[in-house]
Image (cartoon, rainbow, N blue to C red; front, side):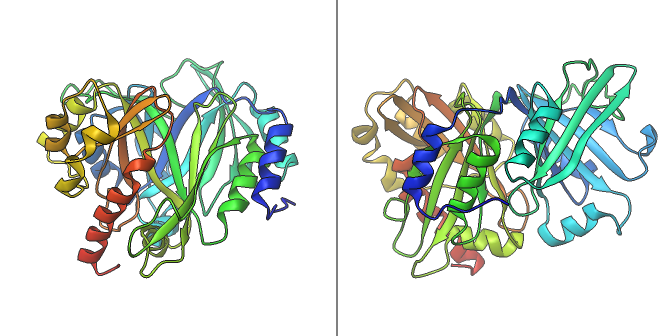
Length: 379
């Protein structure tokens, strides 16, 4: 059984003492279970994602339709069941559109599954081998927070577009990428009192380390607060911030998420770009909506952040946030939720050396979120 350490200091000491035992090579894909995958594809096309592979009735998949979309090194999978009695349908009824699977590439699925389950993970799918004319793919999965699955993928012996059972699609020349290059981090929301449990889970099960900790003294507004800890793998490239609500005068954004998602899950994907000005300008021209902080935020921004390569006029026009740490600065912006439920959303981020997560923006950002909550009657 996975034991919860109640003392953060004990956690951090243990994290420093134990070596890495699980090498994660890269994010393989993120799979969303959605109500209508065919229609959802068109939404993600607006974000610049190209459909590259498909599984469904035409490929002898009688259970669900699934589309693979790519942009840069980001691979998203959108899946929808054919039957209302399928597990996918029950999941969507409860949670709406959202992330079900976070898949990571490893050298050996057998080793990854054995190591993680030995350390307390609940196994969901034992190592399984799939093959077709393009070779062999091995996968296994373990249970994460809420109903989210963490999957291990071994594809060194596979030359196909995605997985056996999927067919490649002809290039969709109507889709124009917007410069999104990779997944920077994936944020999970968990219940009050569960953040330290999942911090310990990421350390014990996956061998991750705590990168940073923000408490409710840092992340708060007049009405609400939250706490957050960021876990990362040995390379520092795979990062999973974990949020939990904190006591406040009114309902926090995390509580709103937990209510409408009906439990823990992935709050947002942060997608990195090398030109956030160009990316956001193009997305806004395509009709996508982003959260907007009060204009007063931009009056003090140059003095707080200092010299940057981008134009502060462009940043203010587009509603982009900026922050600086000891290693550089970052620029970020957050979309509105991807569905009518106020649950999952996207972040676009550009890093100029900074390794943080925009702590200097938290107050302004959360105040803008609270404005949206108030409009929904959920503050």
